[in-house]
Image (cartoon, rainbow, N blue to C red; front, side, top):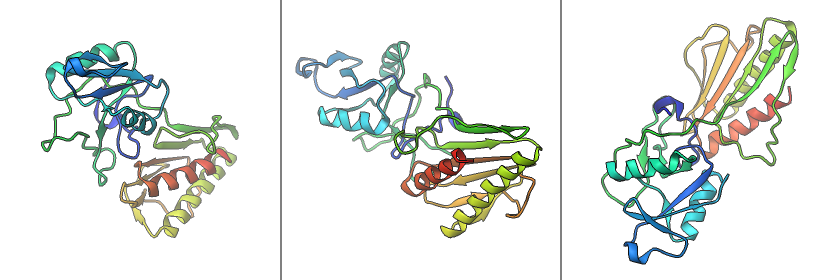
Length: 246
């Protein structure tokens, strides 16, 4: 797939490819592979837990006495790719807590003191953002249960047109974001982008808003993009709740 800014699907501690299953890794000699593990790629591998989230997959691997896969060299890179050709898997990538899109700095989570190069190229697609559209006053709202569903994405957006109802919805959402940012005492202004407002929550909890007056009635689009840290995820879930309730 691709790398870089597309990879905005990091969870609390990080991520990699989107998921059909999980590769658990147990770094022991071939003759000591635990039951259910197979010797391959220079280590013991096990495919487990289809459709799990990154955190659940990581915890399951730890319960097995293993870890999510870390690619340590070019040979392992080529070997792991043969698995991803049949599906997509979580691995042990993370981004430092101070990073924010588009400046993710991916590192492998592993016990080695030296950081390993992130040269794996066969990444899966990022989860789609949660998007509400408004056209001529008609709203299209996705079916998302924020009480039950874990949100794998860190991006949500409202896309509207010049109709009165759509502009009013954009106006209300923008006012909510400004009020929430002020409540958190993290209100900063960033760059202007036509009639679209962009909000970013950095991993350290700082919320940046695009350069727009809070009483503006000309907001046609609003995008919220957050890091996967507790403060930002709390802000994101609240915003998604507002977005889905329009």
